[in-house]
Image 1 (tube, one colour):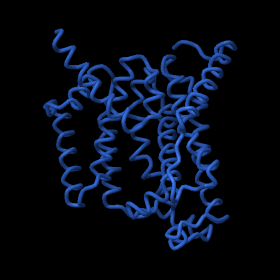
Image 2: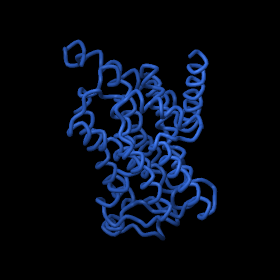
Image 3: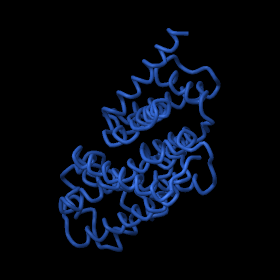
Image 4: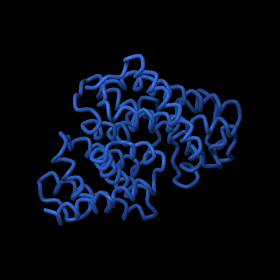
Amino acid sequence: MEMETEKRQADFKYCETIIKKHSKSFYYAFSQLPDEKANAVYAIYTFCRTADECADGEHSFIEKTRLLRQLKKELDLFNDGAEVDKPLWRALRHVFNTYDMDIGFFYDQLTGQSMDLAFTPPNTMKELERYSYYVAGSVGLMLLPIIASKSSVGLRLAVTDLGVAMQITNILRDIGEDYHEKNRIYLPVEELSHFHYSQNDLHKSLINDNFINLWEKLAARAESLYEGFLENIELLDADSRLPVYLSAHIYRGILDAVRKNGYQCLTKRNYVTKEKMIQINTAVNRTFDLREGEGITGEN
C-alpha cells in the first residue's frame, strides 16, 4: 500500500511539473486548492496539454495526425479500463475513481484539437465560440466534478462560458503568433470584414483604429462571459471558489496587459506578470473576506 501511494504521488508530481512549466497562471491559482483537488486539476491539465501538443507541436501534419490518433486510442483504452501504463493515465484513473467524471468531455477536447489540425477560419462569432467550446469549454466541464460536488444546468453553462472566455482571451493574446507561426487566423471572417481589417493588414502587423475596435469587440464578449461565470461562483464548493475566482481574474488580466501595451499583440507576447498575479491575489482575497463578512459565502 505504501509503495502504491508513493507511485501515485510520483504520477501527480509528474503532472504538476507539466502545468508548472506550461501555465504559470493556472498553476498559481489552482495550486491553492486542497491537495487532492489540485492533483486532479494537474492531471486533467496534463491530458489537455498532451492533446494540444499533438495538434500544435513542431511536427509534420502527418506526424501530428498520427499523434492525435494515438492519443485517441489511449483514451479509448482508458475508457475500457485497460489504460496504458503511463503517469498521465495512472493519475487520471485515480481522478476517475475519486470524482464523478464524464469522459465525453475528454473526447470533446480531442475533437477541438482535430479542428486545429484541419484548420479553417471561423466565419462568425458563433463558429468561433463553437470551436472555443471544444478546446476550452470542455476543460471547464472536465473540472466541474472536482470543484463542485453539486452541479446544475446553470453551473455547467457557467463553467463552459468561463472556458470560452479564456479561449477568446488566448486568441486575442496570440493573434500575431497564430498568424505568423501557424498560419491561422481565428478572428471571424465576418468581423474582419465589418471592421475593414484585412489579412494584408495582419501580415503587416498593422495596429490601427479598425484593429483596436475589432479586438475590443471580441474582448467585450470574453468579459461578458467572465462576468456571467463570476455571478455563479457561489455554486462551487467552498474550498474551490477562491482559486477558481482567482484563475478567472488572472486570465482576464491578459486583456488588460494587451491594452496596457497599446494592443501590441501582433509582434509581442503579452502576459500577466508574477507581481500582477500577487496583486490580483491580494484583491481577490480581500473581496472574499468582505463577502464572508457579509455572510454571502457559506459552506455547501
